[in-house]
Structures are given as structure tokens and as C-alpha cells.
Amino acid sequence: MHLSASQITKKFAHRTIVNNVDLTIKVGEVVTIFGPNGAGKTTLIKILSTLLRPTSGKLEFEGIDAFEDYAQVRSKLGIIIHEHLAYPTLTAFENLKFFGQMYGVEQLETCCKTLLTEVGLQRFSHEPLHIFSRGMTQRFMIARALLHCPSILLLDEPFSGLDAAAKQFVQERIAQEQQNGKGILITTHNTDLGYHVGTRFLFMIDGELETVAHKDGISGEALMQKYEERLIKTTP
Image (cartoon, rainbow, N blue to C red; front, side, top):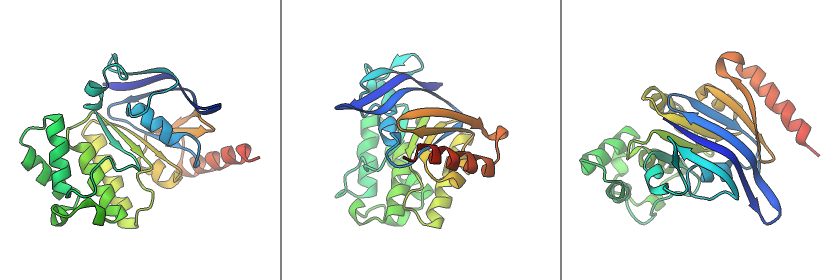
């Protein structure tokens, strides 16, 4: 299974945010996109998750037009973006149950309890989301993203604002889901963490996506140096 974007472009007014992007995400791989703030990473994630339509280009999941049949495609995608995609006044359990009913998840209550335990939130299952810390919210969003057993995970800056323990948890969960056969895309500007979890690396600079290397073809130090050099080239 794979999610494939072809010639994706997004413009706001006269500004091009995402420029002619081609990208395929296959199950079993972790694609890491590095880029500075404002590079277009979040906009791209929103397009790939069908939350935002591009100005032009195509998005397909296993040959299905993702924008024409977005409900079917969304059922195959798990998404983490900075917008919580949840209800802050509802508890963690209530949120999962609500979204699980939308997706038709079987044995829903057991599934919700299991996921909240797996992400370390069992003690807070019946607390409203608005009291959650940044790390707790990120753990909840992972549970929400995994609830319907998606094939592809799209994670926008999954390490941002987290303490060391929460970052470690996210790294471990990404590795676990890769082993479970999911295709994973993450965006980040953290080269250490992005290299650690990734299997294939790209840069996004000024809305354009640039292929860099596979993990077996570049060291972490070389990747960091290449990224820093690339950023210097874009500095006015």
C-alpha cells in the first residue's frame, strides 16, 4: 500500500507555499522531511491528509483519488498536526470513543482503554483534554491517530515542545509502528531525532521538496552538515 502525491502545488493569493511536489510513502518506511519554519511542511501534511485541497496536483491512495473519495482515504490515514483534531472539553476516553464510532471500530471500549494504556494515559482517561500538558496531548494524539488501524501515519513536527521522556516515547512508538508495517511520514527541523527514526530523508525549502538520501547512504553527521549547508544557501 502507498500514498502518492503528484505535482502538488498550493498557492495562497500570489504566494506559492508548496511547489510542484512529488512524493510517495510506502508501508514499512519512515520518510523524514527536514525544513525550517515556513518551508511549507505543515501545508503539505494537511494536503496529504486531505484536510486541505491543493491548487493543483493529484493525491492517490492505492489508485483511489484522495480528494474525490476522501472519506475512504482518511480511514487509511492516521494524522498528528498541531491542531488537536479533538474536543478539549471531552475526556480522552470520550474523544476516542466518539472518533471510534465514526470509523466503525470494533470492540470500541476495549480498544480505547488499550490504546490509552499503551500511550501511558490510563490514569487520565477520564480527564478533559484541556488540562493536558503538551506531552500528554501528544500521547493522546498518537492514540487517536492509531485508533482505526491506519496504513499510513502523517506526523507534523511530532517532537516539538516535548520533554526528553516524551520525545523518547514518540521515537519508540514510531519504530514500533514501522515494525507493524505502517508507512510513516514525519516533518521536523530536528536532524538528530529525524535521522534516528527515519529510513529516507528529504529537505523542504521554500515549498520545494528535495531528495537527499536513504539511511544506509548517509551518516547522521553528514546529514546534519548537508542540511546546515542547504539552509545557508537559502539565507538572504
